Length: 309
Length: 237
Image 1 (cartoon, rainbow over the protein chains, first blue to last red):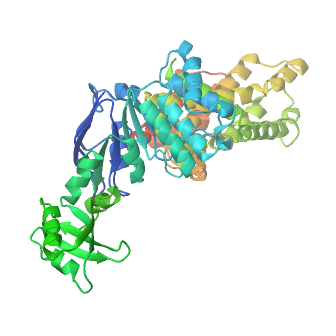
Image 2: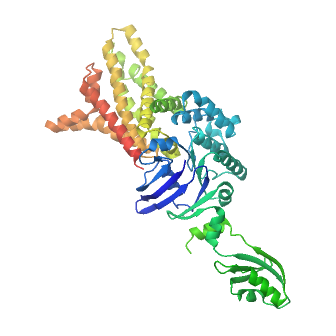
Image 3: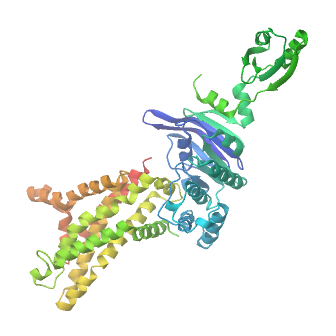
């Protein structure tokens, strides 16, 4: 099932939490939803699961609209809220039975579904423990198990790895990848490496508006828009290599990086400086020992998109 | 399965698995038992095989004990965030609230059932009016339903259990005491109006053994007003 968000707007008092947001999450994709705190990620996700009512706009999950078919939308969505609230007084197995019943899983199928979720989420040894006695990592697994208990077509995960240690993060990420093979998944996160590793596509939201939408590679090229090179040249003593590189028509900026012991060159937009740098070295009879493209990290892209220039 | 039934089972199970539920039950039984049998104008002082003393004490005891049971019903779910887990399931807010209401009502019914030995004892030692006793219990259940409705409403307004407790008492004091004072102080239409709103008027009518549809409608209306207001409060997001 596709998720289609159309012109979604939600205002709290005078603050516009979400401002005319539109995007689509294709069926079978894992999509990352990125943005700084207060950007509107959680508001958008809560609107998708019909927990809050947007002021205008609509969201459809497959053929169902949050405004016209909230019951059907909820039936087709598995949702893991940001703080993963659970009934801590309940044993894991009872909680999953309860959630399955609420999700209208047929009574005879509940024990089977519960057992399958316990196995899939690695909760076998903990299934009779009260949820309050579990570690944060296991609680997160219980949260995922309850979101998956009715085998939903769409999974919405709000910061599924927040607060977990690195080992737990890897485990939960692996679990999301496993279940995400057959579902439409939208997950929000602050951890960019996680989004890059887990997601097929990334949607970036800032101040309630979508500022980027594409694959990690597309985002990098869109955000940087210009070539960056690390250049190592063996030149005679006293030669001002950065200044001569800077003088090339295709080079916008060249600076010496003492740590890398190389020149960092930024080309002008939509141009490559490689040929001119090579020609300069030939003309000056310098030895060009390295010329490597520097990839813009997703962190750089995120900062560029979400901080005022 | 009916969502109300699912919530009812979970809430009742939670109540019987929590220490606070038992504390409230034991405190209620201890308090009413002490004043019914051992202290002040107790059953022996009255000198008749009547549970009127118990029904009078329970009327006041429940007034304080019901807020202690209802205060956590929604406030706790708001505080821990489980309200979000629940209301993003294919479940209407009204089903969720009704499940909680019936579970709390059942808890009160079980607590009151624990006082049936009082009735059995009096039936053995004297000639008791069974109909009055039955109506007395019916009155207590109806009054409890009304205060549970008010308590759930108060709990839906806050995420702080103490605030919910105090708010229930604050609203309850109007029905329990203030409307009666207003009805005594005012005459004419206003006096009648406040008398109609006074919980004691309707409770005493039922406890006396006169089950009038107006009294039933009164208790059901107060409970429904509380529950519908609670639904409106949690649906406003």
